[in-house]
Length: 496
Image (cartoon, rainbow, N blue to C red):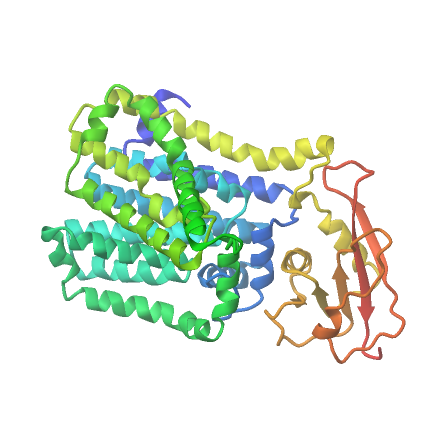
């Protein structure tokens, strides 16, 4: 990209937003041009878009609600699935830029800070691979920081309400988000000038708004806490073979490793771009940079407390998104505090953004389309779901479909969006089944023809004494003809 164009792009938030909009639209288009066989999170959203529930299991419901609304308006397609995610990511960038402007009071630096989110792989790269709820929590985090910084700089009832709205939405995006508003409040208490902003009467309506937003899911959570927390704790790996001290040490080491990995690329890029001034920037400090430092430190200490209480031994980079996404903005706040000429460093930083955009667009498509045929390493996009569903419904159309898991259910619902699809799990178990019922599952081996045990639990009133288990198969998308993906199926009719 031409240097003159890059200079215009980084002139203000509006221009930077146009570049990001083009980039994210291209991202959606690339995904829509690939086969509509779904990644894990895409399949989950496809399946759950059938229901509007107060809770869906291990993940809070905010993103599911948004996705279900979008699907109800424009229908289920890759455009509605991918478009929802990247539209939300675009809002995240915009809100981050607005938060940066409140701190930096410079249109150009705010644009740079917004584009610098691209240097965080958890924001630029990982959403290209999958992720939904993580994108939602990033958006809520950006809104919260915008509300907080606007309240500190020019407080109003609206700015306080933004804090409440962001806090409520964030909690029903990801449970770990709840740490962040607590950390922000504790950090503000350490500053005598800003403590008054925290104790302002306008915090009461902010808290009220947050509680109203959280309430429907919180009521559901009271009776479903075990199912909601099981997966989160499982991902944090509770190693019961270790004593408490060993668990704590391993958990803290994992936290430190994840923190360094999260920030490493951003820090390296900034050090290279501002290499001559990096020491002065690191030494610089003001009221705002100290506040951000306290917020991050308190957040990490609260995670350490969680590690000590739960015995968690594995913290992922993704889990740290709400607490470390502020890093690029923090670095620019340090530059502002240093009060030095940044022009040379900013010139070196500009070309990084289009390069990162190109790099993040390539891997998913390249691996699915180009590499898979030669390596035999297939992604979920390579699964021939369209061909298989076409074979399954070639002789008759089902009234309902039952599958063994959410991934398969979401893929089938994508191909048959007007039909109800259920799984062996509890979500949607109260949806009536319409005959004939098509039951589909993945065989354990080529010779496996056994009826799955879970079927009797899903349809207990049906008895199939001599079921006819059949198999469909098709070559992988962009794969070798000899490599084939198989599904077993059986039809259940009313008179069975």
